[in-house]
Image (cartoon, rainbow, N blue to C red):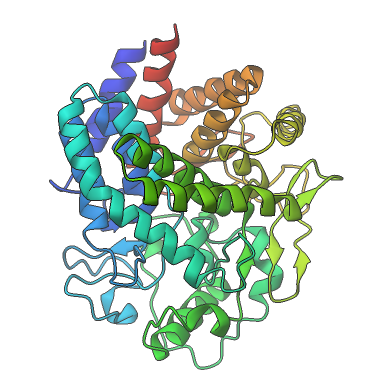
Length: 425
């Protein structure tokens, strides 16, 4: 059963392959997205190691001079997506957005290297990527942690990858809508409106883009200027994991300065994560940096945190939390608990399950020895595919396919799940 499903998944990736990069899906997302590409490279590598390295290299080729890696690269014109280059106006030779996304590239590079059958090729490719990923990590702690807390803040919900999460609701109230230029959304031409962020949320998204644009996309100013500053434990866990993995890679390659810098980032971040822990919720919570208070919402962000090498005790508590959620949910892992008053099983990040999230949580749980949780997550993920195909995301109770169809990173995660299961058999 595994190989036919892997073949279907490879077919979707190939359909969305533009030669040197993949798009998430045609129509809805016609450009290169940051964390989509890095995670997709994992699936590609099972079929074509050289092409997987190219995926990462194409993304990092569009890094800004200050170290930031943008969340979208607009390789070619396509008026089917909003906001396009004409809204961002970042002035790049190849147009890009002006904000970033979860930095999974360090993790992906380490995994590609560790699994590589062609170690000569892997060593060559990682040496060119290493300083770029290092510069991106350094950028985060310079520009998104100006008080040197050990944790970075998001300045736009899109940076989280969890665009319309309940976690942002209170902080988003500080973002005005006055003066937002008229715009026409294009996402609703490709997906059901009930599956997407609301119009009011989009107006605030665009307000922030306009604000940052007015500051010339100067990353020394954007953090303090943004009315939206939220510390996301899931985002920080991804950064910490990537720092840790890059440190290990750098040591292998004899790049001791890079290794020491990234190890220090990871260690400081792990210690600082404790400030986000919520004992009553048995997980980490977001922090509204502007208010200086935790966001009292137990979303999937606090569960993704296990992707980082957090203390074993915390991993055990999160495992218990996930299994408790699983007793009330048909398919793990919902982005918002199904018993939450804010749960919406079809609307993007306010309830649906995502395979990339399942993958990161399962990966962290496997490292923590929580094999029962891993087995449940993998089983649920594959059942979603069998029932509803390779969708962008899924209703966690019904399994209904939501958002975009024939989704690249969903296909990549299926290949990962099935291939790793075979390796462990």
